[in-house]
Length: 188
Image (cartoon, helix red, strand yellow):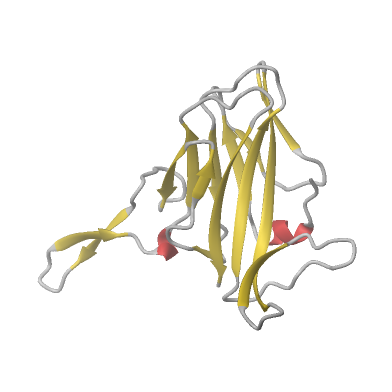
């Protein structure tokens, strides 16, 4: 699965932590990333798609997702402020053994805002978020807001504060199996 520099320009980062130390993947390359921790091997992929609304032959609006890489007959799409991008982070177990303790973490670029409630997973993961640059994670991030009377109130963190999305897979990734996490962001 190839990656174009347009994804790098958007500042997407991907990290993986298996049963051992995390493996950071600072750049998207033209080859799939392979994360190896001792006897474990996991192929990582990150795909970005632009949300496109078009009218079908009946005159109805349809949503389609266009790969940010473009293709042989069609170049990469232009991304503008306000556009929605969907990222899919995949982990493919290329071994004959299950891999347990898998955690996939993706950081949100500075010029993107998380689309609330858009994160999903395939493979049974618990989804958590960070609003402090990846130091802590929780399912429902909150902030303290100072009220006019000087007291503080706990409120849900706004989407602009989200910095990372994390998928912690409860079950082992089966031999030759795969899992993925997906989320959406809005371009600022």
